[in-house]
Length: 216
Image (tube, rainbow, N blue to C red; front, top):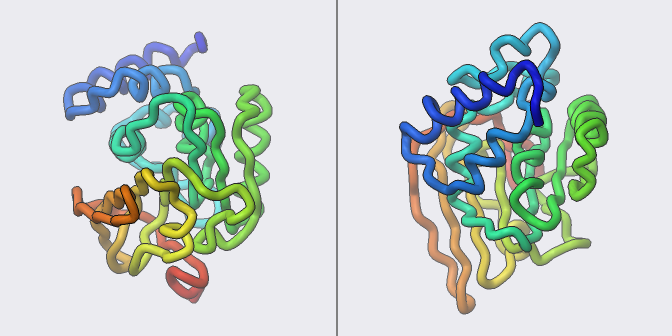
């Protein structure tokens, strides 16, 4: 997509992503394509391609571009997968995923965020994204199993319903820890076995729900 932010997107990809080890060319191309500035408030658009997260409605955030790219790269998407996202937020992560897989199913618990994200998906004609308002820690059983699952909020543990809804083979990435700081966990399911690897430290908003934190 060519617009007045095209140069900013290219600079983001080269300076923030490539220089820090993002090497999956499909991920890089998706980050070049998706107009991140449309997923933030108008007053924040000039900062949309900076090396930092940004606030959005509902006391939530849109993640730093590097975090979006790194988590996406860990899923190793080839193009024909069905991906579940927990925590639609601004919609940016789902939009990036939609350029890399067959179908994205995304769940959000805050209505104002979901409504805003849906408007941008429609504006961009990203019609392979399905969304619902619900407790994301329960997943979306109706469309399971999923080839990959990505969770964009930090919980105290990996929700068991998400593990159950992950295909075999499949990959899930999720921040796990306390409410202040978490570690990215990469869960791989293969031949009935589940292996969890710990990656890097991150800071995400809290994963609220039955299998996450209480909303207090």
